[in-house]
Amino acid sequence: MAENCNHDCSSCAQSCSENQHVKKEPLPTTSIGKIIGVLSGKGGVGKSMVSSLLAVSLAKLGKKVGIMDADITGPSIPRIFGVTGEAYGDEGGIYPLTSSRYGIKIVSVNSMLESEDTPVLWRGPIVSGMVNQFYTDVYWEDLDYLIIDMPPGTSDVALSVLQDIPLDGLVMVTSASKLISMVVSKAIVMALKTNSHIIGLVENMASVKCPDCGRLIDIYPASDTAAIADKYQLEVLAKIPLDTNLSALADSGRIEACDEHYLDELVKKVLDL
Image 1: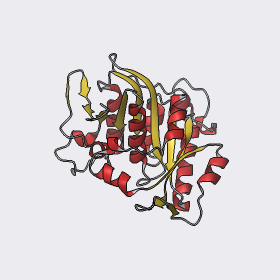
Image 2 (image 1 turned 90 degrees about the vertical axis):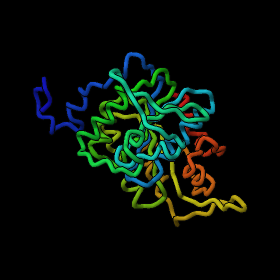
Image 3 (image 1 turned 45 degrees about the vertical axis):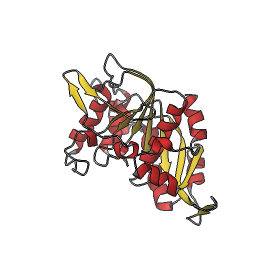
């Protein structure tokens, strides 16, 4: 039962503690226009790729963008952007690293470890605390958009992001696989139970792009993404194929050189928030 609550919270579809949850605040020197979370039902679906492409697309429009790598146990944002070096801070906060081409500010635990292959062997509460610090204790300064690459699934860490950080919208990443579609439904329900606004769905890896002719070849015999969208009254805003050029750019840390327009519809929705 939540504090100052006079009835049994278990009778609520959404607990009183969630209704009364106080959002965290960034440093006084920080001003953030919109905060967008990118979430998937399980790992390996491509939320880090979507987070990166969204950040680059917004930066190309002249927006000041930051990425918070909240996937503490599986961070990949620094590698995708080719950002190296160790993050540092002072008694007031943490200084983000900056991408070379568009000046995207990046905070990730991988920039604080001895090496990028050092595992993070922390329990859930410690991970959640680190995620909150990435929002409250970082010198983000003035941003038009902060993109949060969230941890996968419906764990306590993902729930902490939804409850503690004032998100303006969520992007759900899925694939045409029926298994992944089933799992992403759980993440959608979690978002709805916390009153989070879902901007739409992005389907990743549903097809492969031929490197010779550019033709898209479907990988799965059928996709459940449209059915999931209809069930929860959401829009499918993008379909990203398996693109060898895109993969090569991410692997080599040159994602800012991507000139594809896979997320154009999503970007429009984000700009309209």
